[in-house]
Image: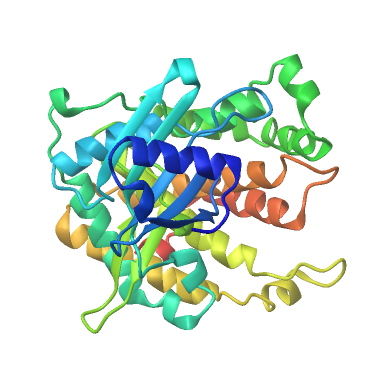
Length: 353
């Protein structure tokens, strides 16, 4: 086995101690790109495990609700939902440890990686994702089956973090975040966000963070197969928010591929996009068609999807402004497009038909 870091050695020891694999069977670990401490543990039996450990951020808070995700995956697995099979969930406050071990989903790529090519923007991938969400949202979940699920609306983070500010929160912000907060406290944004929050309605088992980084795709002759990962925000919530996040992520893929320049007209910038808006729009449309073919929606649902798409883009703008002195061009673009979707969802229905 290759030389491991201290954290990797501790992680392997926990997995071995739980009896999931023998010490001599561990071939090595591969760090994975995530907010938490995530690893793939390869074994001599030809099986790989995905291991996620929580860690504390600069404020001393756990960076990921790993134990919550584990409980959600256990409930979802019992209900027959297609999730990575949970093998171990540890929540030990005395050791300041949360640990989740699942089967590793090999042979797949994230949708964000695939979208760099035309094949990754294929409508069939969108249809597979729409079908997966419809199946998830249609899953019957009795109150006794509900783990400790989130009950707040997805507007809460933006409202608490950037609109209803405390002096301490404002003082801790980067100059870019303060500039964004200034935008979000005028132009009707507080009322828009509060109205969207008031419209939130928990009626289904939801993923809570549907974005291309959390969608794994495997292609075959039978067509693409998708799997949703990173279930930290999953629970009993509003299915329209999942669909809005899907659309917002499509807009973000387009905006993120634009090469913004210090000069030039808007049309010149848009022309540099390497992820065409028309292609991700068609992919999202395929997802919505596949979804509604399996699960009927209310007549006004597409308007709600558009508003939640706008909210997703505001989340992206907030994330892009957490550091630095000035709003980045991408943050400004997300703020502009997200604001348009929140203000006038009826004028931006081309993606939601």
